[in-house]
Every structure is written in structure tokens, then in C-alpha cells.
Length: 328
Image 1 (cartoon, one colour):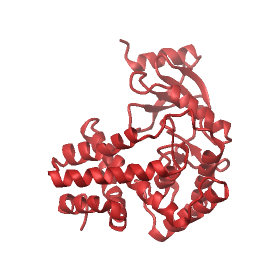
Image 2 (spheres, helix red, strand yellow; image 1 turned 60 degrees about the horizontal axis):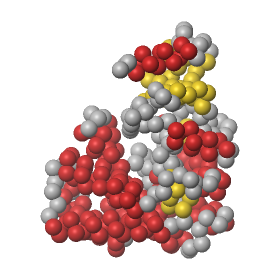
Image 3 (cartoon, one colour; image 1 turned 90 degrees about the vertical axis):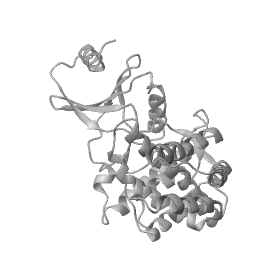
Image 4 (tube, helix red, strand yellow; image 1 turned 180 degrees about the vertical axis):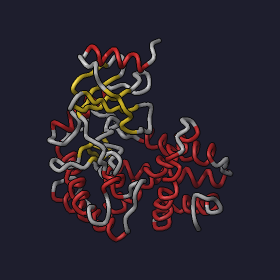
């Protein structure tokens, strides 16, 4: 089997690129990688997605949905599905995470929330994979298997296992109760690029599903990579609720919407902590470990306020407070 760098060189030569420079564009929490292709005055991004692990079909389908709804997703200039390469427009390196501060967060989040509303109202997601109970459960099991089990070496006793199952079931019921819309699944500061026009540029959308209305909102406002004061998050959630209500996405009161948001965020954060742990253990990517304390902090916040999460609150206090992940 040819090395992927050779396959890529051969494909680029077929496209007419010969005198070019390739550099790493970004790190991805999957088997995909991204390279910046510079040729003369032109710059593009090559997505390298080994087809056995990361087929490109879904990326193309979702990119077309986003662009069809008037959202700023990369244009696919050329594709090689057999070998797993895409040539994309280059969105630069100014992601939200590098641009956000107390002065910029207002306009940047205004744009991101407007784009989210457009995604949820303008895209028919019924042909996408369903965010069903099995997927929700598998995601939360990443916390149990990779964080507790493999990273910390913790084995739950029978009482703790029972509490863990109760927590998971409460979070599944919360997710399945909500109206279903297009869900990006990783709508956060590392996947949103700052643009002067048509802001934001949207990346890493290939895992999109048909799922709960608050999922992407929780990804954005309870971001694993940057945190904001609780009062500010509360206001942004309320503002989005008003927009969702006005556009017919929801028909519940603000308190119920907020509860959906809190519990949906907890499900996502359990998954994220598990993924960060797996990246360290399986893939040797240790940089994500520094994001675990922030993510666990969100879980503690929600589990302290929500009765269905009491079991998780006790679990965190029992198992984690003595460790470096949390400051008690």
C-alpha cells in the first residue's frame, strides 16, 4: 500500500499542482488531518481522511446543506473519494478561540447564534443520522470507559454503577424529549472561523445529525475550550430561546428550555471528557488533557443544581475531588 503522502502528491500532480508548499493547517480530534497548500498567490486546504476510518461522503453532503442554506462552509474544489482527499477553500487561521476576548465576544457570539438559528430553521436534517438513544449512550460511556477506567484506573462499585445508569437514563430522556433539528455536533470556538463578512466560517461539520435543539447551543456557550461568566451565558441562552420561540423551533417556557440546555450540556461534557482521555491514551495527543478541568467544572455546576444529576454529583465528589482534575 502506498504511503498517504505519496498518494496525495500523485493526486495533486493530476490536478496540475507541482510547485507548491504543504504545511500543517490544524490538529483534529479524529483520524483526519488538514494541510495548507500554497501555490503561488493561492492558498487551499487539503483534508486527508483515510477512507477506512473517515469517509468523505458525509463531509460533502453536509457542506452542501450548509452552503445551500446560505451559511459559510468551505467550497469543495476537488475530491478524491477513493483515497480520501478533499481540496477545500482556505478559511485562514483566525478561529474564534484565538479571537475571543471581553471586547469581541459580543459581536462574535451574535454572529454565531444567528448562524445557528439559520442552521436549525433552514436545513432539512431528516436524512441525516438520528441522534438516538444508542448513540447518546455510547457517547456517555466514553466517560466511564476512557476517563474513569483507563485514565484514572477507577472501577465503580455496584451502588455507583446504579447511580451512573440513572444519570445516563435521565440525560437520554432529556435529549429525546426535545424538538429535533440539524445538529452540527461540534459547534464551538475551535470550529468557527472569524470573517469580516459572512461570519462565521463553519468547519468540522461532517458528524452532523438530526437531534436535540439545545445541543449546539450548549456546545457553543458551555465551550470546553473557553468559559464565560454564568450571568453572561444565562443571558445568551435566554436570547436564543426567544429567537427559537419566535421561529417555531420550541413551544415550551424559558425554564424548560434552560433545563434542556443544562442537561444536554452535561451529556456532551461527559462525552468530551471521555474523548479527551481517549486522545491521550489511544492517540498520544495529550494537549486536550488541560481542557478536562474546565469541562468537569461544567458537570459539577449542572449536577449540583439538577435533581436527576445527583448521582453524578456524588460520583464526582467521591472519585475526583482528591485528584488534580478538580480543585475542591
